[in-house]
Image (cartoon, rainbow, N blue to C red; front, side, top):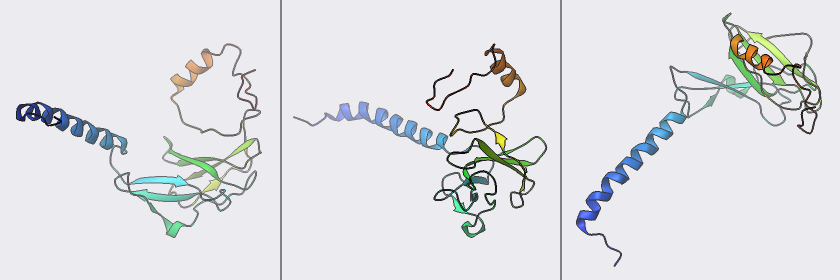
Length: 165
């Protein structure tokens, strides 16, 4: 009782092998694709010290750059850099956006050609009323036009409780 006949083991082995191979594919697919190195933007604590960068060659092990010092200091809004997001634009300039504080109605934005020297815009961008957290991403013009077309009266205002009004 509880033991498999030898021929049962032969039938189970291919299934176990297939499951292990499938798991390896899933783990590999979770890692970033394409040529590295990869750079990760992040903040520590409350974001009061600014945006930091880390790098990885495989997308799995990350090492802080610049001895862990911030690359961009918080100078606008609530003087925090939280949730930093960086994208390389078609102009070959890196564009960073971030949440500037807990209660402010704005985001910070800055530009860099080398990820070391950042030029900040003097004023904050205005966010929708009631917005607290989110992310900014670049989208193709075609996608934006589709979003705008699907909202005949224009974008809805979103209250702090998440309900569109």
